[in-house]
Each structure stands twice: as structure tokens, then as C-alpha cells.
Image (cartoon, rainbow over all chains, first blue to last red; front, side, top):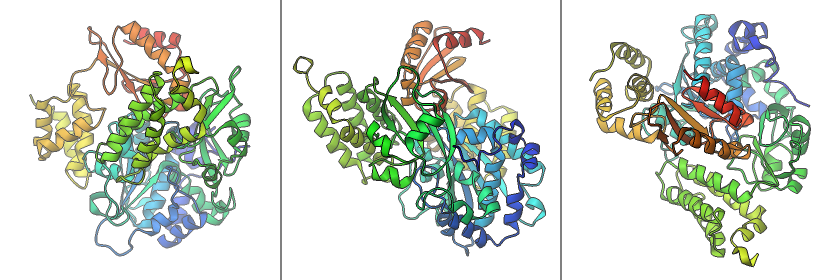
Length: 419
Length: 159
């Protein structure tokens, strides 16, 4: 049922240490990559058709190819380990069980784009995970996989672990760059894109933990081999997390295209006793919810979830039981985005605040019929009108909940005596 | 008030590692907060001097990020997640229990501190451990799959 490329050795407790990683074939991919032309490595990444696993799904190989070849500026690689989208906890698992595959993936990326300095930006709350990575990085330095002349070649690579300090917005790639530069994590206007003017105004590639950690497999087995897995638009495997009242919540690696209900019922064991499926948020809290009927049609892939009006996002599935109020769920989601708006753009700062205030009022039973129109109106006014996608990420679930559960919202704004 | 000599040495090492001075600000603030417990005006001033950057550049960063504290907090900072996955698994009941047990109100971005300065109870957004909800963080450590009984035991066993 699971398809284990990245997670193949996760049962082995020694795999997180360098010795265990080497025994399981670790650091052979970077050696192979260093024997290839950098462009050939980018070509493998492109052929894999791997889409960035941070949520936006932009093709990773293409992102690498945007880094200018001829430039006098230094180039940087930044690994986004600021995992913060509610419902998402896969990168934390990679760090716990397989930190060296991430370091090796970063080295492969650095060689491909010819960068000599890389950063891992890890969310501040992941203190234990930062210690785990720090230890793995030190092991890699001690054994010549990082530092001057990696793997006995003339290629130098420094890797710096950088801790955030509690701000969801720093997971947005240009917010992250600002934060790395020692500033407030407020996103930048694009263009210029990070590929040409990123960290310290230099060409920068930013990839999610999972994207980088699967690169060793792609280099060893070939991009074409990876692309054979999954579906044409969603190649390969995906780490999918599931939380909520299911029997076996957790992270599972599956081949893209698996029916959502197969995942929920067979891998996650179905709902816990006494609970019935009410709705599913398929890819982190910014993705619109699915009804049980939609879940029956859904497959875990970019295209299938797009078609159903939702998105794969980070593939952090949140399962809502039918006895949990969708009004409460949306209120919690609205609070989150209001809390995390960086305050830079008015439609987002004000819009997320109004969505939350209005949802709170409705949840408290004090809503009025016109509140529902107002929620739609505010959401429409937020989308595509801001520097980054946080406003959209707040508006999508709002519109999704209104569209998917109109009766529940209608009932919530109807005075009790009239129901 | 002065920065500790060990901290100054660590800052020097960071400055050598990073391509630009201001880029060391977050790691430096983490270090300094560990020494002083929180970041007062005076500490901000020290950091600005040490890095040779404007005081305003330090202040705007300190006030932007939730993990930098502008006031003293309890010995144990309890950060209870109240995002969706944790709420689905009963987080609100656990937070109410904590409020009742400690006699303080939970709040975001920084909650109340008990009179004996032992606990601060803060509500936080998703900490990225949803598969083991409900959860909370106490100082650096994650506590997962919580129940009221488990929380009581954790609090009783704290030194």
C-alpha cells in the first residue's frame, strides 16, 4: 500500500546517524552527482517532473534551471524547514528519521546550481529538531560530505542551520529571505524573483525539505524512473500526513494518485470507534474542505483535488468527524490566518481580521444573514490583491466552507427560535 | 548590564560564518534571550551595539516574532496548541484544565504567568505535530498525545 522511496529505511533506528545512513547506501547519490555535469543533474530533476513539496507545487527542476549560470554574485540554496501550515507534519518526520538524506539533497542541489553556501531555515519551535540537524550536519562536516572539497572533489559547500523565531509568514519564500537577512519576515514584491535576486540580492533557490530529501533517489535512479511513478501531472511518491480522529494518524509515503478513501480507511485505519466522517481538509488548512461524497471521488494528486475545487497543498490531511461543527472549524482556521498575517498589505491585515471577527460572531450564535454575503465579499476582496499568498490562503478555505456547507452556515445565522 | 563573554565569543563566530552582519540577528537574539530570559530595552541596545546595527532594526525584529519575549516569563513556558487538529482531539478541554490547575488565563501571543513565576500559559498556533494531537510544548520539549492525566503527571514531574 505504501510506496517507500524516501522512507525505505525509516524503520532502521541507525539510519538517522551517519554510520547507518552510509550502510543503507547514503551519500552515493552526491558522489554520482559530482561526477556529472551540473546541468545534467538539473536535467534529471526536470525529467522527474517532481513538483515542489512545500505546497505550491512548482516544478523543482525548472526552479533550479532559472538560476543564472554566468554571474559574479554568489549563489545560495535555502532549504525551507519552516513547516507551519496547520495539519502538516511531514518535514518534522524527515528530520527525525532521515536528516542525512536532506543534507545530501541540499548538496546535490548546491552542485546543480553551483552554490557554495546553503542554509536550512528551520522554524524556531523545532528546537529538538534543530539539535538533530545540527548533529547530522556536524557528522557530515567531520566526514567530508560538507565543508572544503566535499567527497574529495574541489567543490566547497558550507551549510548553515538558521532558526526562525515564531512566524508562519517566514515559510513564504521571500519572507524567509527577509528573516534570514535578520529582518521582519515580511514578503517581498515579485519580480524580481529569488532565482535572480534572492538572499542578499543574489541568485537563490528555495526548496522544501521533502523536495530536497527525495533528490538522492532521483539522482541514483534517474528522473525518468521517478516520473514513471504516480500520474502524469503528479509524478512520484508523496509523504502524506493525516490527523484528526482516525485510528492510525501519522505520515505515510504513497504513490501519487491513490484514492483518498483508500488512504483514510486502509493506511490510517479509518475513523476511531463511534466517529463518522464529516469532512476532509486534504492539504493543510488553506485547502478547501471536501464532503464525504467528494472524498469518494478524490485521489491524492494535484489534478484530482484541483478538479474538486480544493488542492493537494502540503498533503496534510485533516479529518473532521460529522459531530464537529464546521463553523467552529472555520473559526479556528480564520483565527490562524488573522494571527499570522504579517500586516504589510491592507487586504490581508484587515481581511483576515474581519473574517475571524465575523466567524467568531457566527460561532457565538450572534451572526446575521448578511454576514454570509459579507464573508464572501471580504474573501473576494483579498484574493490576488496582496504581495504574497497568505491572503489567498485565508480566503480559499472561507469560500470553500461556505460553498461546501451552505446549510450549516445558513442555520448558524438563523435565530434559534426560527430554526 | 553587559553581554556575557561566552556569548560575545559565540556572536563573533556567527559573524564570521554569515555573509552579512545583520543576518546574524535572529541567532544572536536567541542566544541573548537564553542568557537574560527576555529582551528588555537595555538588552536590545546591547545587541544593536554588538552587531553595529540601528536599535530600531533590533526592536522591529524582537516585536515581530512570537518567540522573542519583551517581558519576563515563567520558569516553564507552556505553549498549548489550539489549532484545528489539536482542537479536534480535545485541546480546549486540556487548556481549560491547565487554566484551572494553574489559576491563570491562557492567551496569545503570550499568556499569563503564575504568581510564583513558575508557569506561563500561552495559546499557540500549529506546532507541526498534528499526527500526535493534542499536543503542547513546554520550553524546548514537545509533549504529544496528551490527556488530562498525562498533563498532570508532566507538571508534577517538572523539577
